[in-house]
Image 1: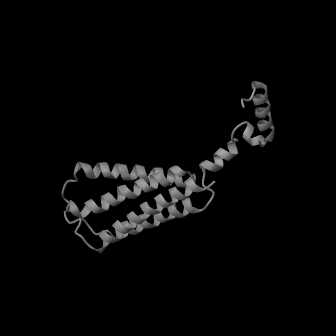
Image 2 (image 1 turned 60 degrees about the vertical axis):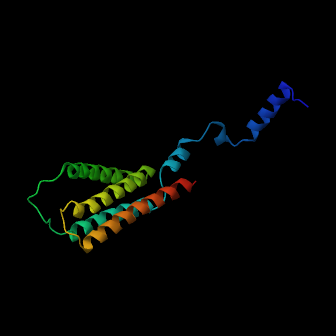
Image 3 (image 1 turned 120 degrees about the horizontal axis):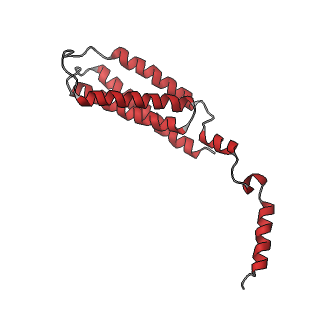
Length: 155
């Protein structure tokens, strides 16, 4: 049995009357803003973890085995990438945005790469500090990904 055009219009009008006012005009700016920003303290905790671990990583790193050796190009590019990722992490997490979690995960990967390459390139000798740095940067990256996943599931 087919519906007439008039009956379809009546049903559509009934639907519009049944919808709450905030759904008639789309989501309001406060809903979009709430969705974009994180309400919990997770971004601040992750930012504090980054600051604390970088301080620890610098403190436990030994002196270079060959300080007079020239740095390879990849090392300079890595340093630029690391600084950019850390700045993006700091800004995103301080503003409590999901982009902070993404930048933090990238920074974890970049830092882990740097920690692995340091002894591989003979810049430092392998030691316990190396395992602490690798574990710490891997943990920060994993925490960032977990926080990103959690933020997507929040209303």
